[in-house]
Length: 265
Length: 268
Image (tube, rainbow over all chains, first blue to last red; front, side, top):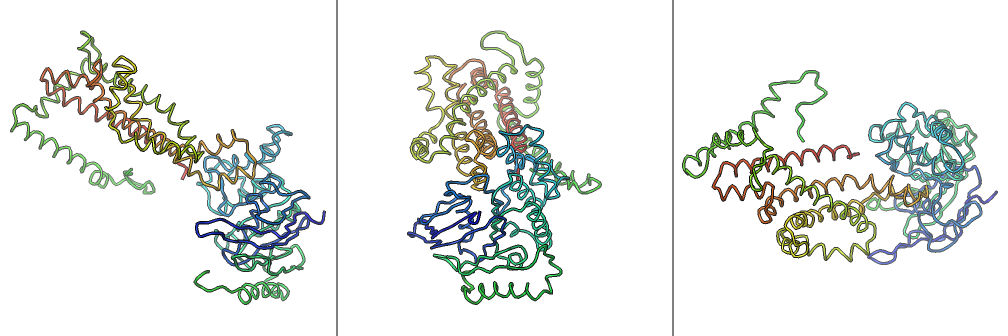
C-alpha cells in the first residue's frame, strides 16, 4: 500500500478566549508502509498537532486524514502512541501497564497465558525484564520511556506514533534508546512517525524528515529524504560527509529560513 | 509527617531522636499540665490534673457496666458515639462518592448543583437537627441525619475535584486503547481519584466526630455527648474533662488511621 497514512490539505484551528487560533494550514503528507518519518520544527509549530491528528486524538477542522485507506475517526490501538511523558499508569506495575494494552488488543482471541507471554516478549524487547514487577515511580525516566515503547509495540500497531519520546532524557540515555529503537524498528518493520526537535536524532533515525514552518498556520516547509544506508551506526556517521550534509540541510531550514526571534523560542 | 532519623544512616543517633522528637512534645505536655494545675488551684470548681487522672482510671477500670438507661460504662458511650458516626458517615459515603463522580464527570451536572452545595455547605450541622426530628420523629435517626448531612459535603466535593483533575495523559491512554467505559472507570478513573477520595473521607470523618458530641447533647441516649451533658447536670467536672480527652484521643486516632490508609494510595 503506497498511501499508508495520508493527510490532504489538513488544517487545524482552536477556539480560544482571544478568538480563533489557526495552528495548521494545508498540511499535505503521505507515509509509505515501513517508513520512519520525523516531524521537526521549532516549539509551537504544530508538529505534535499533526501527530495527534494521525493518532485520532484531534479532529482536523479542514481537510482529509486517512490511515490504512480509511478516514481517521478517533484513536485506536492500530495507531499506538508513545507519549512524551510516558503516561504510564502509576498504580500498575510495568508488566501491568503493558498487559493492559495487550489484553485490550488480543484479549478476544488469545488466552491469559498467551497474553502474558506477549507482554513478557515486549518487555524483554526493551530490556526491562528485571523491572517488570516494579511500579513506574520506582524506575528512572529512561526506563519509564522504555516501558512506554514496550506498551506501544506490544499492541503490534500498524503505525507507531512517538511524541518527542526521548525529549525528557539525558543525552547518554537518549542515545542508548535511539539505538534500541533502530534495532527494534528494523526487527519489526514498523511504520513510525516521530515528533522531535533534535536534528541529530532526526537524521540518525529517519527515512524522511518533514520540516515544519513556524506557527501560527504552520505547514510542511520542506522534506529531506535521508538516504543513508541501514543499519546506521552513530559513531561511523559522526565523520560521514553525507550525514553532515543532511544535518546541515535541516539546520539551514531551522535556523536560516525559519528562524524565530529568541524571545519566542 | 516527621521521620525519626534518616533511614540511610547505619546507626540511629538516639540523642538526636530524643532531642528533636521526644523532648519537645513532652515539654509541651508538661507546660500544659502546669498551666492547668495553676488554673485549678486558683479556681476551686475546676479539678486539677491529678484528680482528673484518677477519675479517668476509675472510669476505665469498669468501662462496660449497665446500671440503667442513663448510667452505663464509658465504653458503651464511646461505642455508641462511634456507631452513630459510622452509620452517618457510611450513608454520606454511599451517597457522596457516586454523586462526586457524577459531578466531576459531567460539567453540566456540576454547574447544576454547585450553587446548591455552596449554599448548604456552610450551614451549621445542628441547624439540620429540627428537620431530622420532624422527618424521622425520633432522636436516634435525627442524630445520624445530622452526621450524614454535615459529612457528605467534603466527600462530594473532593471526589468531584479528583475526577475533574484526572490527568489528560491517562485519559489519552484510555482513548488510544479504546477501553470500555467500565475498564476506564476501574483502571484509570477510580485509582486516580482514590487519593482525593481519601482526603474527602478524612475530612468527612473529622467533621462527623466534631459534630457527634453536640448532636448527642441535644438528642440524648447513650453516647459521649449525652454523657457530658449528664455529668454537667451531676456537676461531675472531672468526668467532663475526661470526656474531652477521650473525644480528642479518638479523633486523633481516627485521623492517624485514615492517614496511614491514605498513604497506601499515594502513587507519587
